[in-house]
Length: 43
Image (cartoon, rainbow, N blue to C red; front, side, top):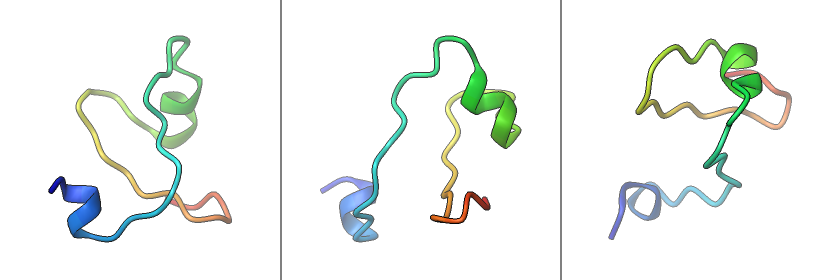
C-alpha cells in the first residue's frame, strides 16, 4: 500500500502543474513536495 492509502486520504490529487500556478498559490518551491489543502483552501 502507498502512503495515501495508509493514511486513508480520499481527496483529489494535483499531479501536474505545468505553469506553476498551484505551486505559486501554495508556496511550493521544490519537488517532490506533499501538502494537504483543506476544502477552505488552507494548507
